[in-house]
Length: 157
Image 1: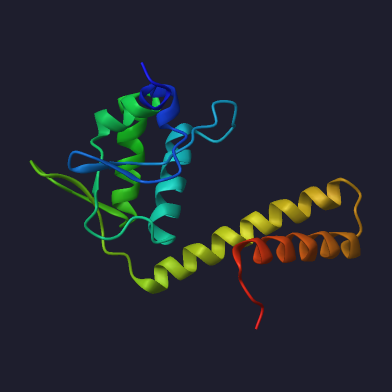
Image 2: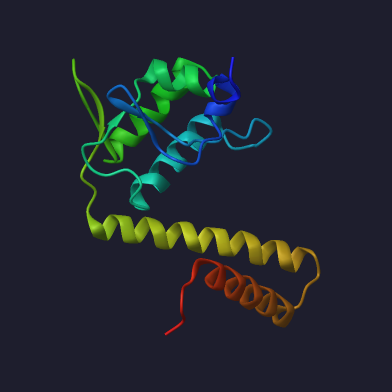
């Protein structure tokens, strides 16, 4: 069996891959995380939708296929899909499958803002826990921002 066919590698893909009708999702499960697996799945699918990697109408793997790919319970993936459907990110059409729903630009922007806010909040909290001063924290932030924008060819205008 080739490494790319190894089921353990499927959860670590970064590119979306088509397999039949549905795509293979680049979801990573952190087994040692306190965050429930169903929530990790939800969060990452939302990020793919908000980030534009998954567009409206894109077919998603079935609950069983995703459970198999991620080596987790069908109950876990079902719960994630149910929550995503209740939140309006996906829709299920009986006999056809599960698809990415149309998500309004305002909702995408709100989720992106909340996600960034929480990420910065955790990072700043960690910096303060490590006894860094606010000034040191700002300097580290600026250094990382400069490094990543240069690497991605983004100019600050």
